[in-house]
Length: 374
Image 1 (cartoon, rainbow, N blue to C red):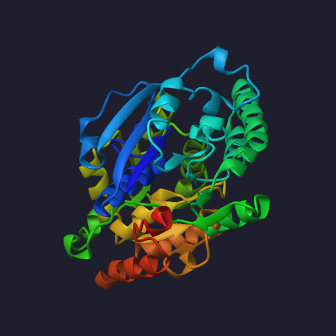
Image 2: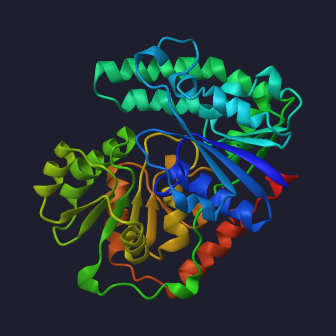
């Protein structure tokens, strides 16, 4: 089977949420015998020859960024991805098309694609995500942009009526799309990820090397808000000997300086994939908090599947029922501090990782492409 996949960004290296889902979905499709033609928009990213390991062909398209794309009733993230060359290439055959995210749906309603099978992967309820970004933003300009984009996305979302299938990333999102668009077939397709076999994971680090890990894209407003919450509200109440590691992409100068002033906190900026994997594998506690319950947090799946440390989360981090069996849930500063103290001195069980992997597999986190191809 041949399949066109339209990605919102170059999915390599797969080093943050949405790109992880896209890349490992492409890998799973190839392993299932699917011939994939990848169409990807790019912005300040070079062409990536490694993508040809997971697809048969790759076409790159530039985004129409800048003020001109702001003045449209369509959302900026959609209107800046409107390459006519993409439409021409999609029309060269009659293969199904998988649109990755609402970002890529500019041509979803185009009459030239009327008779094509069109499937949309929704990574979250996009207008909710942008609304919460607006709440996290400190500048008035940023707030105006995110709130306006959220309003545009809410109205533009009805373009999903032209889809033949919606593939939501959580059961909660699937219920939303089912109720909103009852005439479009909607399914929950859990996120794809780089799975790891339990045999490759060794025991934990010695007592004096234990650390609490927070990881994510450090240029994302929501993640910066969480880090500031950890540093300002949780860390002062913990023992000075409890080490905290913050790791991720592109921390700004302010965050770097703030972390450098705290003796038991270290920053790992822009780690290579191998280094990030090692940090996840050997962390004693994965501290995973969020203030917006949108979509799925890939860092949660990675921590549960790769690391064998305790996972401490708040309720908003839990996308669907079932995760409470493999995580410790604590809401509020007092409960989180108590949980951190307790877990830091709680030994890890070697069999816990295998048990968590089995639990997640039963919940559908197994990189299966059946729902895409059938």
